[in-house]
Image (tube, rainbow, N blue to C red; front, side):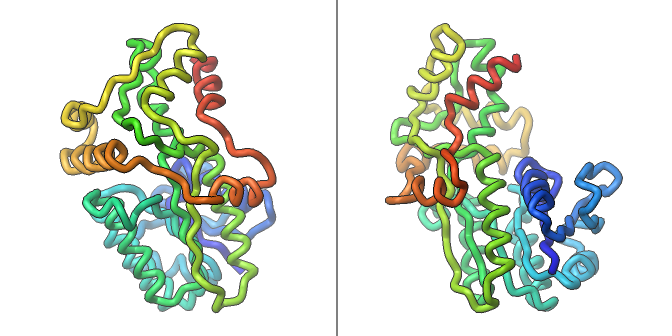
Length: 289
């Protein structure tokens, strides 16, 4: 029995592969460049991507469980639908899909709406599936660490409703646990959805206060100017993506990204340990320079 991991060389996918191999699973990875994949030696590599149907057909042979992770790109939805169709044709019965929390509510945010469409397809196609719905990745803030340290401002416009930020190391371990659980479950096991959240809900002001404590000097919250946020993002990403991120930030501000009842306790039970905190992340990366 083989688990196929897509997005295997990204931040989360790479960690998922590591967890699976450490637990003795047979892992196959779909990668664009095998020579630079740098995955464990026991992992079978298949070169290609989710728009190459012939490659996907080859990658799906003998696969029992699919980990579907695809990046926020213009054709993300198409990639996922092609992959799921090929998986069903190949007889794959089990899927773990990395979606996003509130995908059914943030309906105007393009990549959220796309992920919800994928969720619906998984459900309609009858896969034995787990839909993982992570909240805001703590690790996203690696991109603005230099701004925090160099200019004394936390610039992400996350608002005052609060986000249940989650460490990607926790996401990856939860995903691996769910993949192994699906691998061992009957083919007709019911679809489940799992909010993947951090242990605390944080506002922009609270995140700035955490950085202030870690760095031992005042760090201000940059405020909720999403138009400026979009313009800044356009310096290093396509305009459509910057606009998508702005729509997401506006929903952070209006709705927040909040856990449901029992979510944190459920994840802690699954992991057998506490979830990582934003404070621990800030301390780790502040000391790293």
